[in-house]
Length: 90
Length: 263
Picture 1 (tube, each protein chain N blue to C red):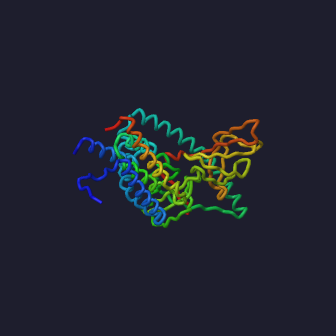
Picture 2: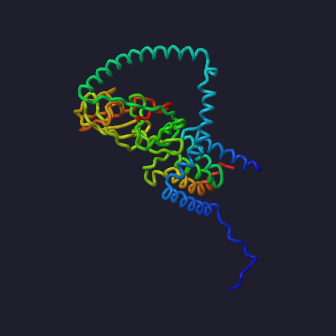
Picture 3: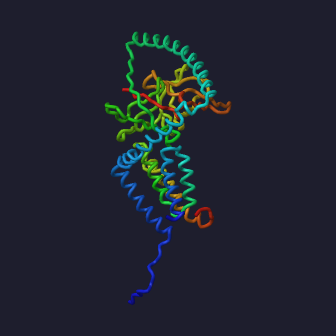
């Protein structure tokens, strides 16, 4: 397995485990780092959906109940042009 | 029209592909939330269950184990606990006297109270969850829980059951951001509507001439046996007709290990 793929897999696992082990804002910081480091970071979308599903309350509005997904989707799209301008990741 | 078989298929850029995937995921998620609103939370809870158990196991081994504590810190802790125990014993005596008086008054008024509660362990606290939400474990419970049931800690009103998903229940705290809860400010007995600010905090604007000071309590208007919050600070200015009162739940919600469900 290539080093990049290995790193990506490891970071994905750490990001996923952080949902259960770390406060939500630390998960958000890890997701932000993933967005900036890796190309096409689809795992961040998954984490956004998962956080919403795990903690959202039933009486919330549609926007409230998909807040993390919406934020992660916007940042996910913004990360593409941003990464063309900065050289941070692998 | 001539077909050029040598022409290479058009390459999709990473951004274009991302857009397509995102639109597809968006439609699926919104569709599921609209048509099957409980599907994603139930799946998420089922996935989370083994990880939460693993976390509690690891925390139990390393942090709750006295073997890993230094002797000096244990001695300090024992001294602090003994002092606290003494203070609490005194406070309990006072509380017992007041409770007896209170019950006597209630009996005279024909409003005798007997509150039955059940203890549940807390799995997720607000520090971990993004919203002011507690997740409680319903393991070993035979009673049916339903949304709207009150959750308390001792004589502190914390919130209500918002949803039961499998073996877990989500509790929305009264201090959730934007949530409004009615209470009565003591000792002035002024009815107030507390506005949740998250993290166990509330805020309320009161007329400047209302008597309120740090340490005053707000009791739950639905059930006066429970405290909602205590006044932490009062901001007032001579130019303003209102004063801003900041309150907090008199218990650290970030370290809650158990809560009680009022039957």
